[in-house]
Image 1 (tube, rainbow, N blue to C red):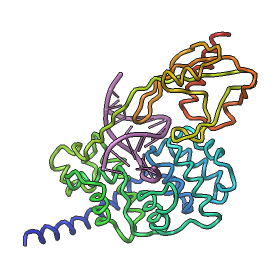
Image 2 (image 1 turned 60 degrees about the vertical axis):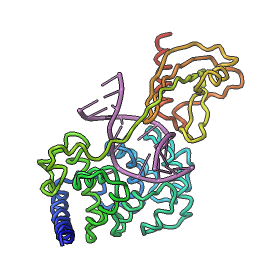
Image 3 (image 1 turned 135 degrees about the vertical axis):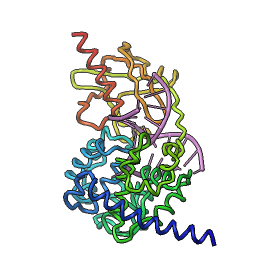
Amino acid sequence: MAPSVAIAITRHSSAVNMRALLEWFKENARPLPWRISKVTPWESLLAEVILQQTRMETGLPYWERIRAAYPTPADLAKDSEENLLRLWQGCGYYARARNLYKLAHTLDGAELPTTYESLLELPGIGPYTAAAVASMAFGEPVACADGNVRRVISRLRGEHLTDSEILREATTLLDHQQPGDWNQAMMELGSLVCTPRNPSCEQCPVSPECLAFHTGNPEQWPLRRSTKQTHIHATALVVSGEDGILLKARDGRVLGGLWGVPYAEGDADTQTLLRGRTAEKIGKVRHDFTHKRLEITVYSSPPEDDDILLNPDSVPLATLDRKVLALHKGHQGEQS
DNA sequence: CAGCCGTGGGT
DNA sequence: TACCCAAGGCT
């Protein structure tokens, strides 16, 4: 009998959690644009993609610009990928932009699909984004599990849960009448109250039922991810003349689709990079990715005859390249 | 499943 | 400084 009693209590507690959480959300939700006025499903999808692994304050200006430039997916499909990347530059994880561009072409003028399952088939749309758009834009009762939800649920249960266990629990708790609000409430709670460090349990609407709160050490959940950052020495070459800077389109997965100065990692590639040039070392730039730290030695050289120079503001550039160009500009200032 | 993919802010 | 980690998805 004991197990069924426990289950009954759990279910009852879940219902209490939901009501308290939704009430807290109504009072404390940040005034985000899509909460102030209604947005289209496309605009909702744009927001979710831009906010993947990106903080609200960082992502919001990008959302405003990109939704204004592309009110519909057809508007995006009509434009070039490079123009999208120009609006995306500095936001990071550029595969998101490349996939978004593919998505617009996949639709081929059609409306956005309206269900979790069909959204999931689109490029760049995974379980989180499909659930977020399906619930918020179309009212489908599907739970989404992002980093916030993972943390909130891990602490509620006081367990180190796998992703599928998190999703199962989120689905159990989901309010089927207001799935979009409930998903947002869970994420908002994780973002504002149930923070990774120094959570504000005294302000939490569900702390009475939170096992982590009762242990007095909620920060022990969820498990920390291991992050190993490798250190890499790289070389960048700024070839500048009156007409601009030598820039090339990058390809591959790292900063693919953006443009940048000639760049190399390792001695052999560096020698190739500088071969035939009279290059002067002008300084170092440090740039961190999630899993690697770049120490970039920057060289400057005058253009050769067949170098094609561009205005850096005319092409999409990553922040890494902007840092390199900023160093070069400062060095030029010193020279004159 | 684990590693990879940007950038910026917080501690 | 070094590390964490964000409305994740792809391979």
